[in-house]
Length: 411
Image (cartoon, rainbow, N blue to C red; front, side, top):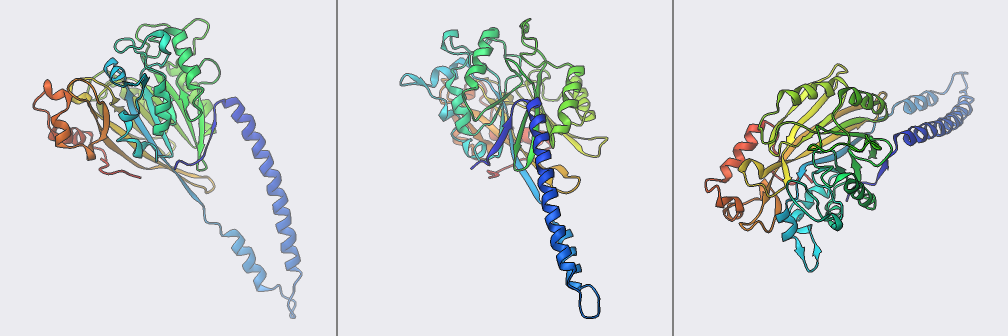
């Protein structure tokens, strides 16, 4: 079961509420402290026969000072590109409805048990009137959003190069529908308001920002130039500066890099150090459609920035061997409630996942690599084109990452 979370979508409202709550607790603290002092004074009046203060009084003072800081944690999951080709849409149409539940059935125990789960939704869900379509201009049935929520996803990123595939109105329609799914928080695109999102779970506050390199040639509308967040260093620095004091951990989702490149390019690396210089804690990269390595950068403030350059594909029907293996990042955020709080990413690893589909591009389903079998691989649709594909290839990819590989359900 997921922990109950508080989601505050408007950063300005959060500031107001946060200050009000702070003042409220200050008043309560003063009241409690006054009561405590009064109690201690009464106890102080108990003097022993020799005129000395009772030693038990001192013991009481010492026990009040000994407070063990509480430790809190969040199990956070991040998945890569949810890329719905037309073959996935068509094969998911059963009995008059588009049912995408089977696609995620083998991964749901992982996603659903995390405290928070993120996904890059690569395709818009504008509605049937726009016509369902795959590459190059995607539009996926809106029932997918309900499936994502039921699977356990909480944060849906829309800042990617396909965000405007159905134009401004198509993206507005997508946002309107996603807004009806209370379990989902959208980042990277908005009809109006703040670009940042703040989520609090287990007494830990996470701040989210999201950006994309471009929109496949589409332009943002003149009446809403902030509809999708684009990579712009000056603007990103400003937004990070405003959000950083409001959260324990700051997370940036970024659509960047070259497609199908196995190593991050120089632009990705330069941007990674830019984020580290601005004290971002976690960078979630996507777009290359293949797995790329992760990197930890030590910051000037003494903390570390974890950069995951690319999680690869989560769902797709692409037909190259590097594109059917992706990764689910498992990250533990830890907070020791001392003064000041001790904050760290205390654990990080990758669960490799395989997108399986049959030879007629049906039965698309995601499997953790640790539960994928030779029998399943033998009937993978890619075997038609690449008969040499074997389990050794998947293992070689995971070794290349030089990252902790998780080989069982972490929950």
